Image (tube, rainbow, N blue to C red; front, side):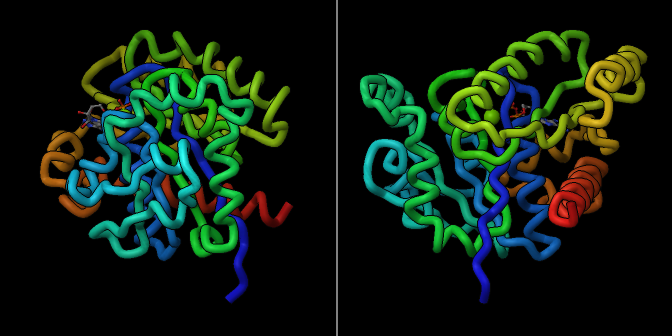
Length: 266
Ligand code: ADP
Ligand code: MG
């Protein structure tokens, strides 16, 4: 089997509660359902992606903390999930201290990238690596941007959606200007859309006017089944495949795949 490099996508937005983790989990599950081999890297100390994929605390003996602070490769830290084709490097609260621990190290921003490269041969079995970021533009998020090919930005359909986006885009520009010139915006996905709310349509229009082609056609609806799924340790797509939220994430996955085909053909 020929090993190619996986596409590494970091799911980032410094605002909390905008749907980063939900998007990482369900996009990853949808990609795996289509037959891709997918790895999630949980870089949030809260570990919501790990919990949402049913990874027990006891099964987090090795975590993203060890990847950033030690010599553990990404592949050695990966554990299987209940979703065929989907693995995760889980996180623990140890990550809270990582910023201070590595602050003085010259390679502090490159820890994740170095770990990806150190395990590159075996990471080659994955076609996608999705990184779930904490709600901050901190050293963890910078590590993800240094390691990634692209940034996927979930934006909640609410009045302040665009606020903060410029700061995020500025950070991406800074990373491009320094440690990772090839970093691009993979896309912007509007989340938690409520059609009964007139404002939501206005917000989607505004974001499309500002960001144009970068905004995915797929809009993720607000859906109770999506919010229930994590407490069952399952992605929404496993919990209730038919619900509108799961269907939207499947559609988002096919948009991402189409993007990748275009990229490869170019
Ligand atoms: P973030 O990772 O950006 O902090 P989350 O993905 O954890 O955001 O989402 C925040 C909260 O909103 C969670 O409780 C999640 O279950 C809920 N949520 C996310 N997306 C949806 C959706 N499409 N419909 C309903 N609830 C959602
Ligand atoms: Mg999160």
